[in-house]
Amino acid sequence: MQRPLIVVSNRGPVGRGSGGLVTALRGLQERDDVVWIASAMTAEDRALAVDPPAGLRLVVHDPRAYDLFYNTIANPFLWFLLNSLWDRAVAPELDDAFHVAWHDGYEEVNRGFAEAVVAELDDRPDALVWFHDYHLFLAPRLVRAARPDATLGHFVHTPWPTDWSALPGALRREVHDGLLANDVVGFHTERWAASFRRSCADVVGDCTACVVHHPISIDPAEFERLADDEAVRAVERELMEERPEKLVVRVDRADPSKNIVRGFHAFGLLLEEHPEWRGRVRLLARLDPSRETIPEYAAYREAIDRAVRELEERHPGSVTVELADDFVRSLAAYRQYDVLFVNPVFDGLNLVAKEGPLLNTRAGVLVLSENAGAHEELAGWVVTINPNDVEGQAQALYEALTMDEGDRRRRAEALAAHVRTHDVARWLEAVLADLNAARA
Ligand code: F6P
Image (cartoon, rainbow, N blue to C red; front, top):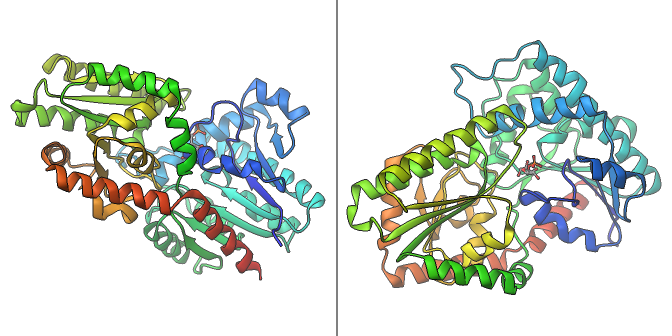
């Protein structure tokens, strides 16, 4: 018999569903034995929290605590640590405000989530509790203390770094203890799972949870249906009319982890080194605005603008940047790329690397960072790049643009077939089976 499920994540399936997590888990809402606990992030969410639709529970946090949680700890700190984004000579600098934010923000919001989970468990004592991501590292231990027999799992959708030394010892321990209060901790790749086992050994001496890895995926039928929509086809026709011979596409949240600036530098280098491609290839960068209240993100947006201006000055007409959350345009771009450029500094998985190949119609080539989790699965059919090596990325783009048709077709078909057979339903089944087995 299937046990009820309590899904817990900071961003819930309400309003603007940015990022892969909500997209991937949205299908769960169709099950009538699932309750999703998420933060009320906007005024509309707070109004909805009073009388939410069935299957949803929105946690209303104290606004100051939530601000410290989201804008000081979760995103500019933990996200940067998990994705190894700092220049350690200058950052991070953990001042008194950081410590206040940890206690009054991160701990407080995790406590709010833990209380909501315990309240749900009172209604459904046999439910599986399934936490997601770095926003909630402390909540499992609080739930475990209140409900020692609960079955708890946590899926970490980011990379797991080997070096946790940027976080002071006591807090480093709090994070690891928090996660180890789960029965199962999941990651997208063997690499991140191994790194977690190593850091548990370093920080707490032992790894008491069951650590698993299953790469998340998409719902191919749903993506194919969405891409078949007339609105997508209309944008696609527009793209076809304007496109030069070859189109390089990237689709990302505007996030420092996505390596967007180096991507523009690499594309510029390609045009310097291979002048025969000037005028014949364009880079279309579809960037979804993200976490704009955070200074590190605002600075990165400026760096993106500078890189685009430089590229435009040197090679007019070589780049189109669309800064807008517009899924329809992303779907149309997926269908039309010759090269899909996915070059993150680090990425837990990267769903663009699966969505694109599923929908593409031109036997396009995937140029993929070796630090994207998806690389562990897809390496055999991509052109691999190192995210720091801009010269290497320029060469990889050239290789992708000049690859012969047979090779392109063979790789593109293998990628699409892999995504079709390794879909999100399969991921879900594997993770839930682990959760059930761990407690049994
Ligand atoms: O993919 C990581 C992640 O932090 C998800 O948890 C989140 O849904 C997505 O990025 C978007 O981030 P945010 O919720 O901060 O807009």
